[in-house]
Structure formats: structure tokens, C-alpha cells
Length: 402
Image (cartoon, rainbow, N blue to C red; front, side, top):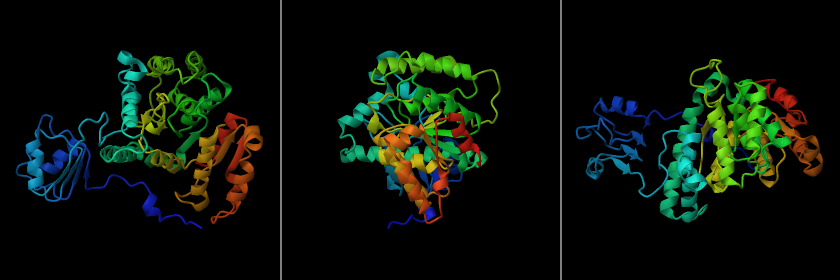
């Protein structure tokens, strides 16, 4: 029987003190005359003011994904004892991103070239052309460096939220990607995201269409009245099918533009507006044939689907909502259940299944999950399983204890 790894092995860590990720931190360290033993990540050191590194101690310094004013600067650093991993040329994505993606960044190019011209689509086509999930070695190194940068950026992005609200305030929402806009399940998921965000929960989804888009949409409009959420869904429902890529994306951008400014009411906590204006999406280019979910406040997009799946479930310590879905959703149920059963990431929140008939008759997951949780090494956890047809009941369960 497998046992969970030690907590320090899988726990997310704050940025290591030896890692430099901002130009301000770099300039501060540079002023001391030594960067020895430090790691400098993804900085544009070719921009004014260009730093003078000639007199700086760089023994054991690692420069990853940094750009220098010339090749000679990098070569000189290596001669003086540094290690330099430059940005890979010819890649449409950064090998060491310094921040999570925004909807605007993923959609860049749509106005000029439609869905095919978007940054998100261009990266996906590059991904496919270089082996997809089994890339050549050069591409694999670039992708791994990119995903490591996303890992770092995700820790940075969620630090303030977790410090303020705690890990039990993060709620995952899973469900079918093919749910049409405007359908009853879509509207339920949107109301769920709206209610959770208004209750100071960080909504986390897999960043795809269907239920995932709906939940982020609800969080995006959390500061607007309910009738505006309905109006936004009605507008999106004019392009219900995600396989109609251009119309689907255009409708999303129209809604974003209409509501991006937010209502007149002031925000409540500086630095956390993104969490209450769409929450978090964690998608993957493995499913890049699906349009980007453009309603999340921040987007941690990975190449590795395995890392992406584990990250969603690791963060969702305040509970997970499972709307009706098929094989992918069922996989997520039991992947999450493994973490809960063994206490891999600490205490778990509620498992809320929307649509009682679906989860007891069509896919009878409850009959498997309750006995499994009852036998957990940490005691009987079967009470964490809830089935309901009522979104507001689901919200009450998820907000009762955190």
C-alpha cells in the first residue's frame, strides 16, 4: 500500500531567498558587489539601465532565461564562474515566465488574426509541431523551464490570498468541458462561482470551456448584481459551442470588455482584486484545441497536464465541486480522493457533487467514494461527501467551516 511522501516534499514553498525574480531585487543585490551562489530568473538585463556586471562576483551564480546586452556579456559571466541558461531562440513562449498569464495575453492577436492568430493558439500549434506530449529534447527543456516559471509565479500570485484567508478558502470547480453556454448546468456553475467569490473563496478551475468557464465567469462578475450575470450568460449563449472557435472567443471578449471596468463599488483588499474578478484557472496546452477560458483573473497555463492536474487538486483545500462530467471529471474525483484518503496535502474540504441523480444513478460515484473515505487512516471521512441539486446548498457546505 502506498504511503504519502513527507509533507516538506510536496508542500509549495515560497520563493527561495537565493532566487532573484525582479529587477528591483537584482539591482539591490548587485549593489553589494556579489551575486555569488544566487539564481537570477527570467530578467531582461538588456534593457536600460543595462547593469554593469564586470566587477561583480558571480561564482556559482545561475542565470536562467535572462537576456543580456550582447552574447559577450553571457560568455564573460561563464568565464568568471557563472552558469548561464539563456532563453531558447525560436520559441513562441518564454522559457522562464515571471508572472502568470492574463486573459489579454492569451487572446493577443485575436483582433488581427482571429482564433488562429491568438498567442494561445500559436503556442499550441508550436507544441503540436514539436511532438506534442512527447517533445524532442530541445523542446522538452524549453517546456520544463516554462512550467517551472509558472510554478514560481503561481506561488507568488497566491501568497497574499493564502496569508489573508488561509488554504481552506480555495475551492476547486470541476466538470464537463462540453457543457454549452446558456444551458442549465452552465448557469448553475456560473451562479456557484459568483456566490463563492462573494463569500471570499478563491475559485480554481481547470481553465477550459463548459463548467470551468462558467465558474470563472461567475467569479469575474462577483461584484456585479445577479441580473448582470444572467445578462452576460445570455450574451455568451449566442455562441454556445466551443468548437466554433472564433465566435466563441469573440463572445467572451465582448463580455470581458463590457464588464472589465467593474461596478462603482470600491474593491475591498488591495492586491486581491484578481481573485474576486475571475479567480484562478490552471489549463494546459495538451488541450489547446479548446478555446482559452478568458474569465479568470490569473491563468497558470502549463505544458504538462500531470503537473497541472496535481496543482489544481493541491490548491483546492477548501473543497471541490464536481458538476456532471465524463471520464476526465471521474479521473479528477479519484485523483483528489487519493490525496484526501492519505492526507497528502493536509486537511481536505468537502466533496460536493452537483446533480444527485447523475452521481448516484448514471455514474454512481457515491457508492465507491463513501466506503473508501470511511477507511481512511485518518478516520472516517465519509461525511465529507455531499450530493445536492441546489447551488446555494453547495455554497453553504463549502463556506460553513472555513
